[in-house]
Image (cartoon, rainbow, N blue to C red; front, side):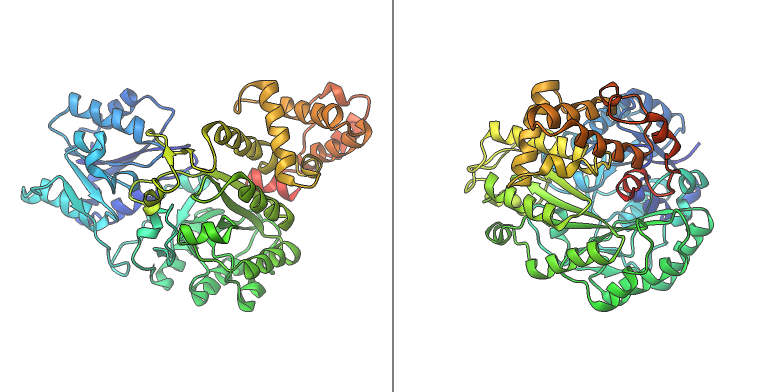
Length: 508
């Protein structure tokens, strides 16, 4: 039994809810009267309600995000029907803006806006200890003093440490004002005290954590802090250790480069939010980046280090047409990065991107994840083809199953045009963008390259066999039987790598 249940619906089991752990760690005397219950979006809300109410809580705190707002709304509706006496408090990015428009806020007793450690604790203390409740539904979270917060890393269980991605943060906030991003609303970047943070990382390592995902928007904004964190992990490097950072692409001085170059191949991943390479679009969305420095840094990372690069590009920004997006995609392909994450613009609640709605006829879906449907420059039908392009690029371009075959799919004057043609062909063949078995993916690539592109089957088979060998696959693919020695493929199968599977496939 617990007086306070902290709950959320994760996208997948492997994602551990970092926000809930921050809230529980900072409940003060009430921490021992609380429990974290995590679910995922594939579970039925009625079953989740049953599990939560089995704790006999007085307060339920629910983390709401763009990916779980629909089932979370159903969950809150059920909770208030079954147990109306229980106080339901919602918080998180999705409910921190435009609260008056949201059904989940209407159903809940309170909504905590913004960073919630202090506000949620005060709210719970009022309900459970003093009997003083806020007079208004909306409770402002404010900006907690990071030096006074209790770090949340002790809230990770041994099971979390052994089986899940562990999220960590050395700072909060973002120095940029990109209008499509909620971080544009942050007032400043604030740092957690470095010494206790690194001590907590050391403890997580001792507990067996090998995958660290930093949620900081810009790990390399403060160079001294970035160097200290890199040096910490470099000094403790061991097989299987994997660290993910978001980084500013045009800020990589020599002292950071010197450290990065020492990491073993595949142990570092940098997520680089390029988003667009069109200067006019950058100006429209208040984005600042130095293209020359960015290119130099990315090329250096590719040439001199074993860092896995995950670069973001967005479809549907105001002022960007298909040709502009294609040019940006082609540039990133030329950089040679392992993954280009092609995303479709989303209108996140509260972001300034909405100021462009009239000028560029920005039409978004009214349902999560609020993706762009059409603009002045990209009509709905074209946007649908680009949406399929993004989905098939993730399957065939990013996941690492076709590293050797990808250059064949991209060959031509424009990598975008070549892969766009392939994506159109695949959709015509299968009629869907999901639930395509891997063997079927290989068959589709084979058919397209040998029959549509009319490449020599012996050449395609040689490259496909290299991809199969690199990923350790020995599945029967009948169309290859005339071209490969399957027994030799089994003999040469590589041992499993201790990296995350997607990164390991790229590493070969």
